[in-house]
Amino acid sequence: MFRNSYDSDNTTFSPQGKLHQVEYALEAVKQGSAAIGLRSKTHARSTGELATYQKKLIRIDDHVGVAIAGLTSDARVLSNSMRQQAMSEKMLYGRPIPVARIVQGISDKAQMNTQQYGRRPYGVGFLVIGQDETGPHLFEFSPAGTAFEYYAHSIGARSQSAKTYLEKNFESFESASLPELINHGLSALADTLQQDKHLTIANTSIAIIGTPDASIENVAASGPAKRGFFRVWENDDVDQLLRAWRRSRGEPEDGPQEEQPQAEGQAGEATEGEGQGAGTTGEGVPPAEHAAGEDVTMGE
Image (cartoon, rainbow, N blue to C red; front, side, top):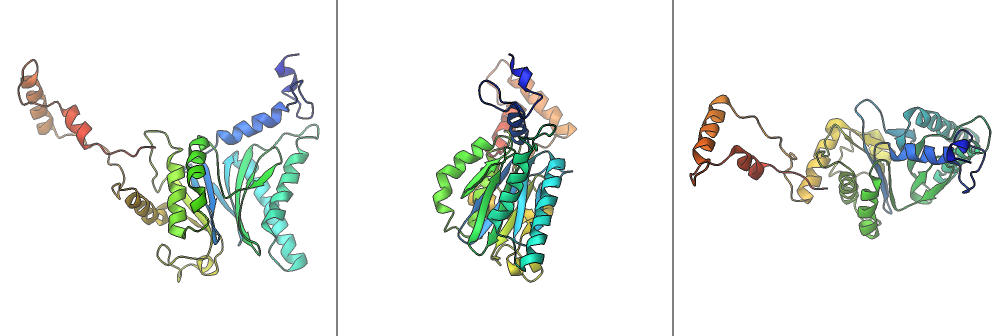
């Protein structure tokens, strides 16, 4: 039988032992915006490349948050389920829910959709960061119903490039300070971008759980920061972090500058000089060579 004979049913295995609907759900995660997660012995953090109209970092409780890649609507359903679990734990036991337990809860919920007829797998993946009595945690949740804990991980589009960076540097994460951990996350996220794209305040958002660092955040003005709770930095709040990250890489703080169009008078002079230099050894230099010398780009 052809592969398509098994595409419409998520409860029937193909002759190769695969559930194609689950594989398609995993592919939906790979097509989503990139998200990076890292943890040290004191902090857990997540970085996401954001669509301007979609929220990719979601607070679950004071001590738990998620970064998503995939279908936002499915993420909303699962995040609401996580909030209900966290609320029930507080009402019944008077304590924050352990991070591993809340991740196991949504993993069980996702796994049920892979074995019941008439349902489809969730098309979203999570990076779950949290802190409990045992310290900071970073989990990856997939639509197949699996969850694994990592020191650092990435999901979403072109995430393999970020994984390569994380694998080379993860041994230094445990003892890293919060600014160092943020710089590592931004470097990994930058590796997932296309060649003509760069990290800006419009496409980058950062979430933190852990002890505040007065050198990069206003502790007095932030209640969650004072207590080490989950907090998100977006838009203008990310600007200083991006500037510090560029300085650490020896790049201009303002980032790559776009080429400015020439004025009419300058354009006329450049055209005239180019005409004088054509076919001779004159001193006229084509404008393209000037532009190439002045352009500053960020390599992946």
